[in-house]
Length: 460
Image 1: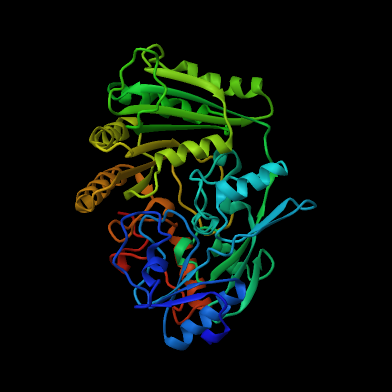
Image 2: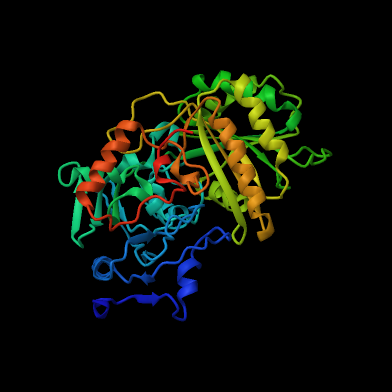
């Protein structure tokens, strides 16, 4: 069967295997998990051939599109790793507004510019170099998400290769169970997605940001204020409060950088500068206005925002990451956040409070857990000797938040090898298990990496 493969097949022990195993993993903290082989596919036919090759050798199949995946979901011992880097072509149907793209297409550096050129958009991811495969499968938390919903909601069809090597189109009318699962199952999806078909929307012509810098000492008051105003904000207004140590934050002349800054970065899209600025003006109600360390309000764009995200998420660094959806009130949440924020001790480490405030039922898709605010912490460092320190810290601090009003996690910022938590409702988790059993009864397609299987989707 390997004679039918046009791409590069690297068996364990071959020259080039190690680069194929971990060369495209964003996190410099590379796990000690070793596939039996890595297939760098050339096209969709190679995906089919790879699945059949795995079956012939008794291997599982794992998949890499190319994202941040802090736990490196794609690395499974003794599996065949399908690296889909070559599947990154894009087409657009002007009549329907549907864009079709391969799973390795990079959301911000490839797909977003392509759509901008035709005046369209999707709720694209915040980190520029992430492939859309894992992003969409996990739900897709992106720009304009409060107004337009999860990116997965816009996936109208997927083309997949099943565990038996069959190429299928999956949408609301055919193979609907796989279409349902593809929107939220993440690495538990029981097939290999080789193409996404995504409904776009007309890109708003105007985007602004309003960015304030505050002292950590004002953190509790800011969190209380944000919890108060969040339900009143227009859905196009997206507030993120980030604790960051980066030096290039907006500070007034003469203000000394305090080490860690609370950066309230709010974006808004709309039809005109006047309309967007009016929507952002609600932030002028900030009760400590006048005590800020700096403030900038200005036009921005997806490209500029993504460039800033790349500065906050540098390549070649080690990452320990965890997250929690929280419905806790500000009295409960603020002290826990400050514990996290005060402990940040490297230049690039940061932690966010992201105001979400769900107001509608989710569509019928696997993705099913969200909360009032999203809390995520990214500890970023360079010394391998610090791995255990930072992994322990991020998971213990996030567990404290999860235990006090937490409702679950978003798959995109998790590491279940250290702290599993609920990511689907109980009903949807059972439904996904049934889809997996029906579509992949032999467990050929690798699933979630979790420290104890009995803890999968159990709220901590």
